[in-house]
Length: 97
Image (cartoon, rainbow, N blue to C red; front, side, top):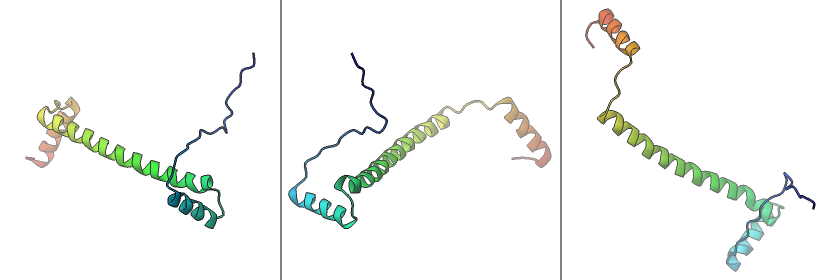
């Protein structure tokens, strides 16, 4: 029994149905650049996907940051011993905070 390995240059397919007018526009745009529809569409899809993921990650991180901030305000961690010592040195050198 032969085992076939997927080649590293194999690619998955993405098929979609488009309205006739949109298909004509895409074909024309690709032709204007001297490219196939696939060659024209790949970088556009890649950029759109990357932009969508960046926006999603930004929203998710903002939400997580907001939660972390609120938790830190409501339940602040105790200062480390080095921080306490640094504050004492600062107060001694410069007076009150």
